[in-house]
Length: 123
Image 1 (spheres, helix red, strand yellow):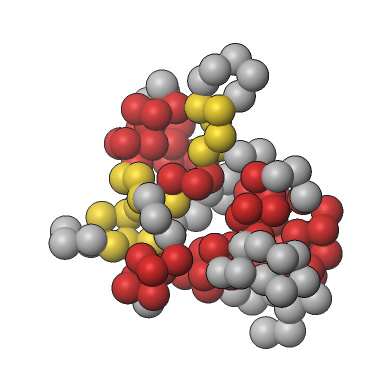
Image 2: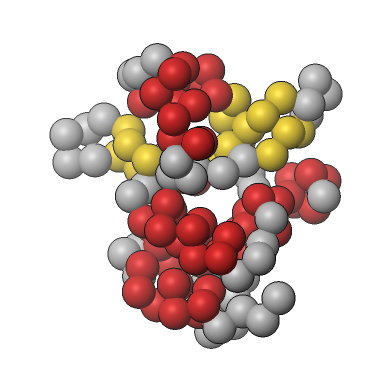
């Protein structure tokens, strides 16, 4: 599955890299994973846990933050029965009803539309 995800997702961050980008400590980042604010998979040569870089956005303060709409969308997808690799595949695959990949729609502020689409998935 990670090779399929590698075709869909351009950039990945390890948890230490994510902590550095967010200017925080690793325990905070582990909390983000636990709270489902981000999801990831084990990948790469050393099979380290990594999350998509696209989950980060630059705020008005100029600092990077986790895209706030990821968490709720991940929860909706999990409630539909998707595993974390399946969630990532759905978020980063083009979705006809949205005209773009769901992650792009989330980054464009189309949260409600993405979640409505996610709720109609029949897995």
